[in-house]
Figure: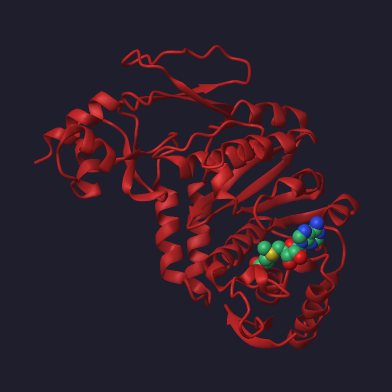
Amino acid sequence: MKVRSVKEGNTEILVPIPAEGANFAPSAAPVFYNPVMEMNRDISVAATSAFVKRMEPDPEKVITYVDALSASGIRGLRISNELGVHTTLNDWSEEACALIQQNIDNLEIDHNTVASHKNANVLLHEKHFNIVDLDPFGTPGPFLAAAARSVVNLLEVTATDTAPLCGAHLNSGIRKYAAIPFNNEYHSEMGVRMLLGKIARELSLHDKAMNPLLTHATRHYVRTYLEIKKGAKRADTMLQNMGFIAHCPQCGHRESIHGLAVPIKDNCSHCDGKNIIGGPMWLGKLHNPDFCNETITELETRNCGTKQFAIKMLELCRDELDIPMFYDQHLICKKVGVSASRIETVIQELQNRGFLASRTHFSGTSFKTDANISEIELIIADIR
Ligand code: SAM
């Protein structure tokens, strides 16, 4: 395998060069490395560092982190090299494992970093780790049961199967997440809430609860950072965040319905159109603003290539309202027959009329609000 050197953050590692004339998709290389995911990894390092600082470690106690699906090891190597956390880098590919070991040796971090050559599910069933990171090809579904068992303090998960999560591949989404998504203007938020709903149910099997610290949908993936607490009561309380969305395609009104066995109206409470129902999914918070600020501080003070974009996105995450689901201004303008305004103008106008309103990291042309669809349409029509 031919390799080249790349540097992300303060960490220089070897990654494969795809054979000449070969398919240049990162997944076609003998060991996977995708430069497009650098921002995901920059935020990972910053968020993990912020979390480790929150844990206020006893100097005697070792914090353990596992990158359960490591490939070249870039993610976990950065955690180990830049944060000094005790790290396990696991991959079932022999070539990946050999490259990981070479990278550990080159970085001289073998005192706190080990390569592991196992099925991730076996490793996660064998051992508990304070921090578990899942960054798979596509869905994390096959690894969630083992990760939920293994994790003690922080679960970090990427999902790149946005088509099933967002309802574009409906049956695949139902199979993988045991829930019904719909593919409309807020499909990216739908995907996030489908994934979190699945993780919450996996954790509850182990009497564990999650508290989302930061969750973002970026390009082709969803990434979440979940603080974990043990306890059956906590798990019961967490599950109260599960529920459904009743959406009326006729008028765009949507309602959150909390609970797993709850009556849901067939018809829209607003225009009497026929509702479509999505779920069960996570209807709770996606972020903790203090944690977003702590992660932003880490990004500001660290060496990372995507600093500006990452900070901008995290500020949007920090400031967005907790209300599911966002509204797309363009869609509403089309319906009302007016041209779109600056998103800040729409938000200001909603706030002037006494509603809660914010931008959202999901889309630059969208907003979150507690106003209903008729109130929004009136306000948008009035902006001149
Ligand atoms: N985390 C890496 C990064 O940031 O560049 C990318 C990981 S890549 C998307 C997924 C990796 O999971 C591949 O290297 C593959 O060999 C490995 N893998 C897939 N199924 C596995 C399993 N059951 N156990 C261990 N490794 C597995």
